[in-house]
Length: 238
Image (cartoon, rainbow, N blue to C red; front, side, top):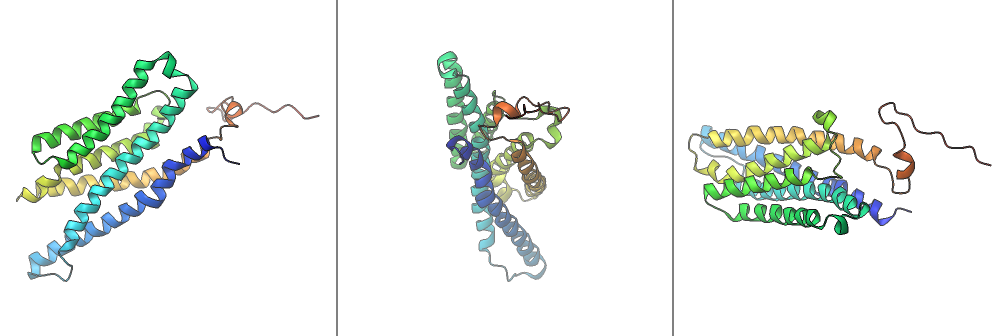
């Protein structure tokens, strides 16, 4: 029977599968329709694609940014909380625990204020604060980063994808005001990169699930030599 703490490990990938990735598909579909409508209108003066697709793309894009940042925070929070409880940091390092809690609150608040801000300067400020909060929280003890193989680390790919989504949200109002379409091009390029990163997230996330032992398996698994792919032999029974 799966224990509660093991079930929490599955919460992050479960939300990604049934909410985030379907949302990515819908946003991509609406982005394609929005572009096709714009091109058809430019050439033919009209399009059969309804004008509402642009507004829907923007609305679901905002939802996607919230979902990606939220699931990143959830993925970071689980190992941090586990590390705090395992090492009894609440009593040993109360100021560190308080700092971590404040960073979570500040990061979420910065994202909320980013949605509400209309001024370009303040959008830049809150986007920077939200991104910095993610990075700082990701640097805490307990987070599995795989830094020696950063190029296929689930953590690093996820953080970069979340930062790109925050930046895309910050520049969204500028896209509609820029007649040269430079911000639109930047938005398109960055989100194409983000799409590739999301594909990488699906691959690396599945891989990492294979390497996460259940809580009752941890004492034995962590005796293994991961570099040489060997584990201590169990003594014969009987």
